[in-house]
Amino acid sequence: MSGARLYMQHQLTRKNFHNRLLEPCIPPPTSSCRVADVACGTGVWSLELSEEVGPVGIEGLDISLKDVPSAEFTPAHVSFHQFDLLQELPAEMTGRFDIVNIQFVMLFIKDSNFSSALHRLLQMLKPGGWLQWTDSNSANLKWPSGTPGKVAVQMPKLFSLTKELWGQSKSQWIAEIGHRFSDAGLEEVKVLKPSPQPSTLVSTQLQSLWGLEDGFQYLRGKLPADAIRRWDDQYALAVAETQELKLGFDMSLVRAVGRKPL
Ligand SMILES: C[S@@+](CC[C@H](N)C(=O)[O-])C[C@H]1O[C@@H](n2cnc3c(N)ncnc32)[C@H](O)[C@@H]1O
Image (cartoon, rainbow, N blue to C red; front, side):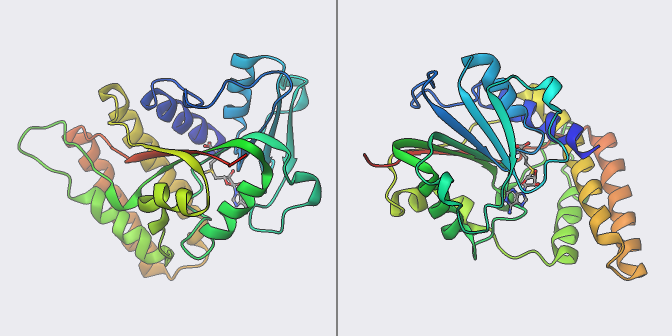
C-alpha cells in the first residue's frame, strides 16, 4: 500500500511545482537522450515523463522494485532496474545519462553520505547533463491551521517524537543544497522553494499522517511497549487535531537543479 501514498505525494508535489516534471532550464529530452530516475519508488515520475516526451530511454532505478508496475503497464522505452545509490557505481552507469532526477530520499541520504551520493549522481551524468533533486526540508515543516486563532500543537509533537524514537541522524544538506551543488562543480545552479498551492494543503497533511503511520510499522517490532504506546497516543492526538482544526501541511519543498560542466 505504500505505493499508493508515494503516488499521492508525487501528484501533490507535481502540482506545487506548477505541474512540471522537469524545470524549464533543462532542455526537454529528445529521442537520443537517456534519463535516469534514481530511487524511483513507484516509477510514476518515469512513466509520466514518458507520456510527455514520447520515445526517450528512461531508466527507473531503485534498491527495491516492489512498487514499480509490471512490464505490461510500462512503455517499451521505460525500464526499471535494481540499483543502490550507496554502493560503488557500476562501470556501465558512468557517463550514461543526459538527465538524472532524484526525489524524496531523506530517509536514506544523511549528512554522512550526501557528498558520496551526489558524487555518484554526477558520475552518472554525461558532460553537460542535468541533475534535478526534489525533497522536503524537514527542519522547516509548517502546519497551517484551517481554524483562525488555533495553531497546531500535536503534529509538531508527533514529528519530534518520531524523530526521537527513530534516532534519526541529521539531514542538514537539504538546507544547503544549492551551495553543495556549486561546491561539487555543478553550473547554472537554481534552487526553487515553491509556496504550496492552497488546494494541496489538506491532502498533503493526510498523506503525511499516512506516511508516519506507514513508517512507524518498521519500528514496532524494535521498540519497547511503552515507547509504542507513547507514539500511538501522540498519533491519535495528531489525527484528532488534524480533523478539529482542519490542518494543512507545508512540507517545505525544495528543488535544486544544476548542470555538469562540459
Ligand atoms: C520516499 S521513496 C521516494 C520514491 C520516489 N522517488 C517518489 O518520489 O515517489 C524513497 C525510495 O528510495 C528507495 N531507496 C532507499 N534506499 C535506496 C538506495 N540505497 N538506493 C536507491 N534507492 C533507495 C526506496 O526503495 C524508495 O523507493
